[in-house]
Length: 127
Image 1 (cartoon, rainbow, N blue to C red):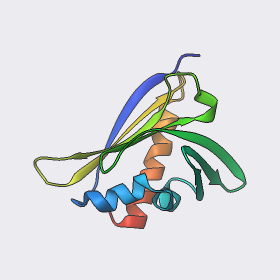
Image 2: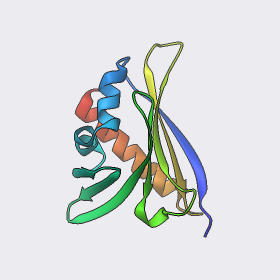
Image 3: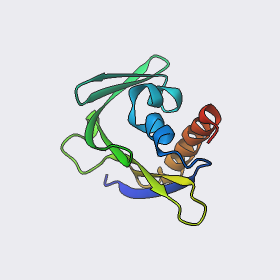
Image 4: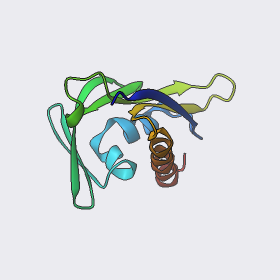
């Protein structure tokens, strides 16, 4: 089944690109909020939750701007997920834009999962 692309924007209470980048662009930062554990071997990231593991490949990395992964199961497709930092002109705060793909009928569940992940990010970092 063809997945549809969606984008979510989360306004964060920080103006520090370095703090936000460390949370989304480093294995240690990702292990704080995205997964229970992250191991990296070159471009291969293994994310673990409880006793489950899922492998993703780093397909784009623009330091302090964005990071894009593709799940192993999506290799050979156009599907990916991206975490992108943008500055908000009015407040000076930063926003995190999530770009992801979902199966028809699964978009709301995917958004709820991202909402939960971002709440964990906010709680752990104070953003």
